Image 1 (cartoon, rainbow, N blue to C red):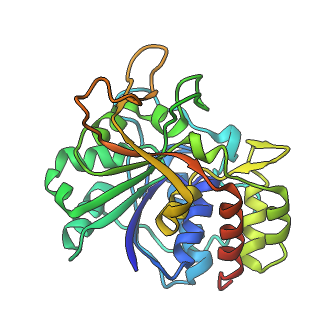
Image 2: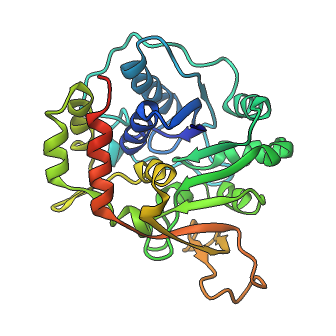
Length: 305
């Protein structure tokens, strides 16, 4: 079983990723921390608690609220995609557990340092909490086996022509993370835009169980759909953890642009020309989209709700 911590900004695709992670027997979600991104951190925290409560009925996973703002640049949300609440489409219970009183950074430091084995940190929002953690408590680096991060693109972005949303939200935090020396797997738009959940998959899951209906309803409320389906970007991090054989990764050096019209761009040294052959990330460049859809349907079918 893989012990993981999820740092996220739910968000529809974060919610779907958390739903799968909470239910898969190969994963142990030890802590969830939240950050502003898709919507403000007060809302992302409530959304994380809603998903955990939906599946756990009081036997909760601890949740700690984190950064309200990026390190440097002004905050811009994605409510136009996810709705004002960040997770429209389904009516969840309002009888929720409370988040931890400690901050996300304090909770991350405590949990990581207390783990007997190195832990995987799954990042599906902006990386502000992670940058603060690595800057304030550099000793955690040796206790992290890797960071699996949804974000970035080697090609076109989805926030600007160059920048993917998670990195664009806080490029200065992304730069700190990629320069930290912690092993990083970058799951970017190069694969998440290929692995669409098809309309057929969404039709199937809504009739499987209560969880399938919930996921169908929030996913089909996503404002970033195409006629071929919807990209559940963050779910790809969980797919990678469980089925790395279905993704192709390449080691390369990733630089983060933090100024100018390309602010938030992830620049991959694809030719290995500028960093003396050194790399700081394994970058996903291809994915088996059909396998992704089959896997997602199986995960939903096996959910206990």
